Image (cartoon, rainbow, N blue to C red; front, side, top):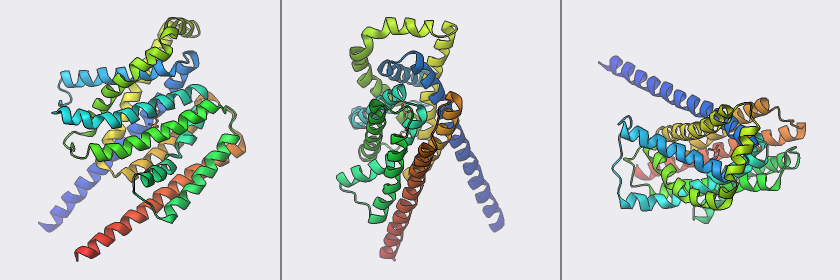
Length: 327
Ligand code: 3PG
């Protein structure tokens, strides 16, 4: 029986590795499509608040459709769950809108280079929340900050709002992750897909009223200008719809991946995703890239890799410590 059990185990392992590879592949592919259609839309319709709200609306309707058709089981939720969701959804909203503002001001590749510095924010905000990393983790942040700095000063499309948007987006997403871990800990029975669905819906309620207040009055004229700048109205409708559908799909895939892997593997996967998106968007939009800018981006991304190695080393040390204590 022994070899059969080993065979079965190997098969289960390889099946889940195949499934995980498929989820990662989907996540990257959907993110590239989102980034391209999001930027195409913003190029003719420069209203990030309205666009970001529309994307959350598409996601909310998508989830309502999945639940109504029973394709996705509706999760049991209660008042306590909604209260726990308020913080993470607020930070998700901040992360999303500020990224969208950044995309509307600078090249997609530049926003993603700055967003690759998210680990640096993670170290600082974790320290502010009482979780201190050792010195080698802090040191791994140095190339991230230096690389981003070099990329920023040599960026052809540089714009202050674009830089700030990407930086604030990092703060938003890091706080979302910290508060998700803290407040949603006891709702583990809600899977990644359903959790992200509820985050979209609550985020829509946060964002839409503010978007209407800030950009609502530009809506009719902006829509008219957008339709006039494309070959046919359907081109614009297709772009905006694809940006909404793929925004939801890539987030859904990333939350599905998160169900299976540790947050650390997740953040390495997210950085690798940015490499794919940066290359794809530079090709798609033919953005000029200066050699020093490419060097800065590469240093920043290499720094993220060092950071992941340093934190992995730390968590394996901690685990070993726990095993020693228990023996
Ligand atoms: C957004 O608009 O929310 C950003 O595209 C988020 O970017 P990320 O998921 O790549 O961090």
